Image (cartoon, rainbow over all chains, first blue to last red; front, side, top):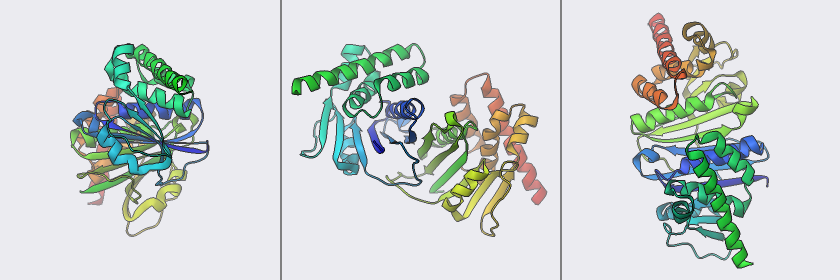
Length: 185
Length: 185
């Protein structure tokens, strides 16, 4: 992997920006990659469309840049529709299965639906960690960073008492992915 | 002001990314602007070149974007030289007076030198808040956000016991600017 661009989109309050910060930290500090992370501010407070973009590279990242993304993680229908044009045609789409109903028909895209809110609610016991469930499933699917780097970054950023809940969300996200892969193999 | 792009550059450990987050929050939450903030991750830990970019707009910010910046805040010579080409020719340059020795000769640029580290050390008592001193002087100079919005954002982001020191840094930065403006009027 020389350079990967990831876009996480959703609604303010879902933790899109926090998920981006965690992913950026996992890659930069624990995998020693060059990372540039971009976020829209204010949406978390206003409940409007939110997005976080992370560029991970093994080499220096030039400034400024415009590129299509390799991985789109969509936690809202609006976000999917708005940012799908920025996904490479052979890219990876990971979407929240109950919030995104209409997904594109494509032979080239790799597509994974994750019932992240349901998993967060029923398996972890807190729907607020749906953001972590979906990025964990995406990480299992794409190997952007290791599970260990992700967990270490979470432990740095998230204080107790939410730390344990977030780490459990990682495990459930990755467990879900393993089950999907086993069903399909 | 319809759209302003600010670039803060320096070395990891100077708090370039934190200064950007504070400015972004001040504009997004307390002045209800649209804000997109971009940061390089990892430099803080590695002590290499760090940058933070903030776009503040009264309207929706399109994605993706490539623009020259309106304001460059340079806390290192290397940062100034690398990013000066991205400053608009009639832009504003704010630089750390003891770390940046060679500044461009230009009739069009507005240029302000701030002895931010000296002020942080001698007036505030902690050189770590030089980042806040320099952005405060820049804010007084450019009116990107109000002093009140800046202070409220700092109070949100910085926990005690460093909160008071950071708020004092805002006051000293703005006081420095007033003295400069008085000398020149």
